[in-house]
Length: 557
Ligand code: GLC
Ligand code: CA
Image (cartoon, rainbow, N blue to C red):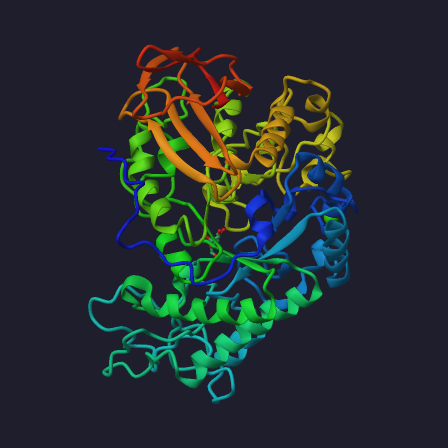
């Protein structure tokens, strides 16, 4: 049951770190490099392709790109298995191409963030190959190895080991897939009976920590503006409450603030209260703990492994049978605990969340979803292709460790030419097939249509940027949110301005009254700044909201 938890929380994170000013107006765009734009006809997107499309990215109004991993890799997990952290994968280009991307983007006012896979490497990484040798060497303690292949783990431990693959007499701990061995950041409370569990201050874990900073420094010096950190909570093992992992990241942030005060770190953590305390500027709100984020858009079909309540209706389904409280019950306390100190990133989707937001949703459904995503506090993020309502290609065989995620990783749809303008390669050579029957889910078709989703998103971005009440840190207060009811209404306030946002994803009209206690009277006339004209009107003791089915409105009051 939703109980307005938006007041000050006892566990509120104190703002210990200074956030760079540019974050206050940041809007992110995630690019999966494989599938964005191919310039050399090999069927795989590349860095020159991203450079070629910078004017398009700029036209969206977004000002920060997050690039999924683009480093040397055997691509068992789409590049999240890195064999050389200092080298761009040849299929994407060269380090110089990436440097050129940083420079050209910067000239257009766009920052580029890379993906930092901090928790593991590929088994093909030279560090791991050395670590797997019998003879002790400087890399022996860079990964977590048991000291004998038969006895690996204390009884009851949740860790698994992979054994029998190396000259070294021991098994290694994977961090994700078996070919992604965990880097050794130590154990929070090493078990003395298992001496291979090293403390965080042992030489191996300290060397790995130093290397992590070296990687960050290398790319920042080349022109990157920061990193999205993969599985950020996974570093120190057996770490109750993530205390030692939080400490580790705080150390990184302290160093960063000194040497690179404009750089940012975004965590894939999913618990903002912890991630922001750990020094991350932004946490990606994945709703790992329960159904919060999932309940907005992906409840009925979600096929992933986390959280209860995965079946049923999402709030942004036109059936009108979703429940906004499922989201707010989780998000509310996290927002309240971090609002002074950092940002939560609410996103349209990512390379892991299937299905795509556009799957099963009409253009009008999606406008309502984006009216919400682009008016909430924090740093919003659009996953490439979601701005044209791409639906993805369900049922594809797994590509590079994608499994159910493969369907959301298909090529960007640029125009109505062959391969949707993504590549000149023969269709069967593409990284993944393009959507068949994409209809108007194509950039060129939407460019000149004033009613397109693409143009609606551009308008929403402009509105966000030009209204201080909608800035990333401006206040957020729920005005109307009833379990199982529509619409959802909230106020954003800042810079001397107050904006009421109302979203009604249900196909039924929404007609509700709210009291002056919930929404105090306006000083002047109500002004519609987006969506349904005059959807908010004064009523005798408060306000009347009248919205048709599948609509949204933003009102300056
Ligand atoms: C993160 C990435 C995902 C990857 C995994 C292992 O969750 O987003 O794509 O497979 O980490 O690195
Ligand atoms: Ca290519």
